[in-house]
Length: 105
Image 1 (cartoon, helix red, strand yellow):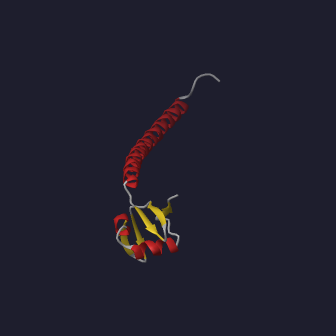
Image 2 (spheres, rainbow, N blue to C red; image 1 turned 90 degrees about the vertical axis):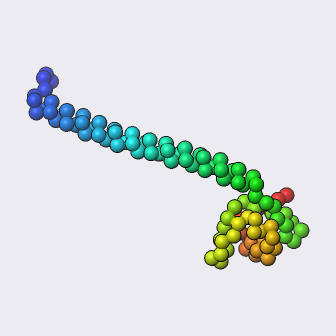
Image 3 (tube, helix red, strand yellow; image 1 turned 180 degrees about the horizontal axis):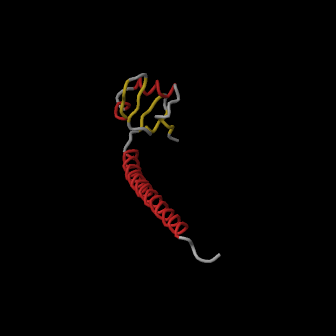
């Protein structure tokens, strides 16, 4: 195979520069993804902390744990705290089997 011609050498150098650029771009994407992962981990900790402080409500002699801190029903926004004072809303959520409430055994 022997020595490279100047043209082949220049083509290889151009390809190396192209690959270095690709590598740099991919490293930037990787760094961005790492930032997103770190942010999501922090949010996960916050959500877990908030979830542990969510109330338990009762309806029809059964207890339900509120598992979502805020939600919407028929276009109106509610918080978990609203369920502690709004028995009609609790009844409606139980009847519609909404994922906002989970039965406590």
